[in-house]
Amino acid sequence: MSATDSSPLRPKLLGRATVNVVVAISVLYTLLPVLWLVLAATKDRDALFSSDLLSLDGFSFGQNLTDLFAMDGGLYGRWYVNSLLYAVLGAAVGALVSVACGYAFDKYRFRHKEKLFGLVLAAVMVPQTVLALPLYLMASEAGLVNTFWAVFIPVLFNPFGVYLGRIFARGYVPDEVLEAARVDGAGELTTYVRVALRMLGPGLITVFLFQLTAIWNNFFLPMVMLSDQDLYPVSLGLYQWNSAASVSPEYYPVVIMGSLLAVLPLILAFVLLQRFWRSGLTAGAVK
Image 1 (cartoon, rainbow, N blue to C red):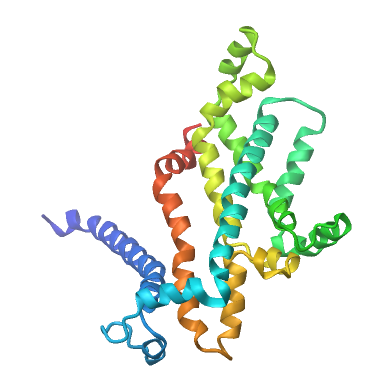
Image 2 (cartoon, rainbow, N blue to C red):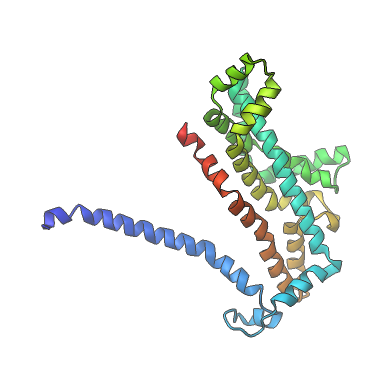
């Protein structure tokens, strides 16, 4: 092959090598903290402070797990259940609400529809921390502060989920199918539940996973709303323990073990539902 023929290949090879390097660095950046967390969760306090995570000395995975669920009267188990209720139930109901709103924005005509949808898009850009104080004042007026509902109700409404719901409704639900259902005598609610909602399954799962991740990692809203430790989610509870660890070092191993267990539901959800959210993410491209 001549030099002229090989010269066009060099930019391609350099570009491919650059992409591979960037991907490798991104993978390491993502996986190394997780690897450290897994290794640190198996160590006792002395081995943890010695930073000798790769040796077999100080292996204490079982003891750390026992201490985690025994610490402070078993508060971690209660926090874990609270997080599951906030996140799983909240994401399920929130996904249904978001997809229904997105479907209405896409399939129905009503006054000022695009202006209202513009407000939804504007709300996407508002940081959640900015809304914490107004939500607290509203919850205080309603007498909901320091209750389960003070955290659960606000997470049911997600502007970004509504935006995704409209995209999915446009990509998955043809207008011709809805017209055929109406011709057959189906009402609007029946058409949505029995026809549209089944087509929106991948989109519903995608919105559910987005909201599950956001609610599970939610920290600031529970910190503002709650003072009763029995109502804390895992994120806020571990933060409290980590703050106490500077005075009581015995909290360090249980905080690390608790952090490891805290990421498992999200990993499990993404693994079990991956075939749905993968197809859901391509809805806009297919359309």
